[in-house]
Image: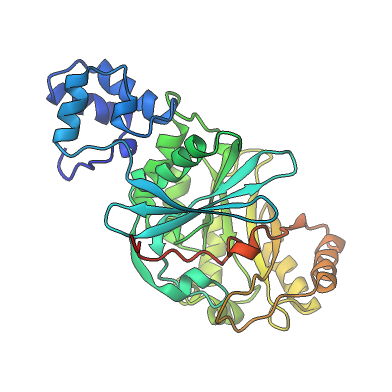
Length: 347
C-alpha cells in the first residue's frame, strides 16, 4: 500500500490482512490484529499476545506501532469532565474531552485537526490557526486510548466537535467512522456518532453519501450578514447554499439535523434573531442546541445570563421548534465548547 500508515489502529481489517500476508502470515492474523486493537484495546504490539512473537517483532522492526497517539496530560474538572492531551508522533498535542451525561455514561468530544483554519470569532481553537489534519489512526486513537485509560467511564456517544473542522479532513474522518463502526471493533451505531461542521458544503454531501452518522451544523446566526461576520467560512459557503445542501442530506425516519447556536449577548440573542432562526429552519427536520458562550482568554464576548438563555429558548419553543440548552461542562479546565487549544508538546 503506497503511503501506508505505520499506525495500525488506522487500518481496516482488509488492509491489515494485506499487510500480514505481505509479511508471510495468513490473512486471519490481520483480523486478529484489528480485533485486539479495536475490541480488546491493546495499547502496544506487546499486548497482542495472540500473534506470534516473530510477527510482532517484524512489525516493530518495520516501524509499525499500535497507535499514533499517546496520552500526555490529564485534567479533571470539578464536574468530573476529563480533558485528555494526546501527543502525536511529530510532537503536536490534540485534545479530547470526556463529558459526563445524566445517565452516568460519557460523551466523548473528538478532534479532527491540530488547530483550525476557520477563525470563528467565538472559538479559542480558531485563534490558533491550523497545523495539519489528523490521520484516521489519530482520530480513532482518541477513543481507544480513552476506553483503555478510563475503564470506569463508559463512553456511549462520540461527537466530532473538538479541535478542527471535520469536513476539511473528510477522507480521514470518513475512514475513522468506518473503523469505529466496524463489527469486529467498536461496532458503534450510526446514532452514536455525530459529525459537527461549520458548513463545508462539499463535505456535507460526501458525508451523506459515504457513511451513516448524525449531522450537526454550527450555525450561530440566522442571517448571512451576521453569520459571515462571526464565521468567515460563510463567505465561501453562503447560508442559502448551506441550507440547500442540508435539505438534500439523507435523513432516515425520526432522525433530525442538529443546529448548534452559540448565544452571544447583544450579538445574536434578540427576539428578532429568534424569529429569523425559526423562519430559516422551518423547512428542515431539525433540533436546536443553544450553547451559552464559554469565555476564554482574549475573547471579545461575554457569557450570557441564564435568564437571557432561557428567554431565547422560550421564544423558539413558542414557535414549536425543538430546542434544548447545552449546559457547559469542564469550563474550569478550558474543556467546554470552543475552549480547546492543543499546543506543541514540550516534552
